Image (tube, one colour):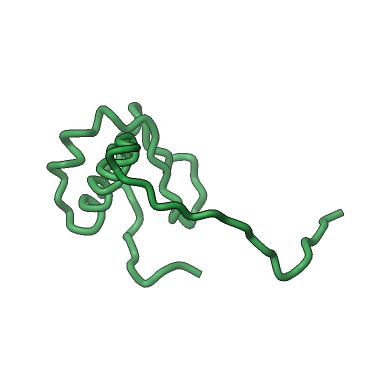
Length: 92
């Protein structure tokens, strides 16, 4: 039996502005994500190459096939040629 949630879903959240000097680990994560973004959107792989060993797992969330091969790790490194075309118009 599939249960349905009540609509509308009310999400409570708390947003706080935190200075980067108080949480430097966020800057590291931001830089790692930026390097992947630059590689995917601009084809510039130099920053990703410099950090490649630091990525334990990259998951292609936009993969429409749902194949396990879209999990990139040390045995299956992220490579733009292996990925489906990266779309900028969104997904439905």
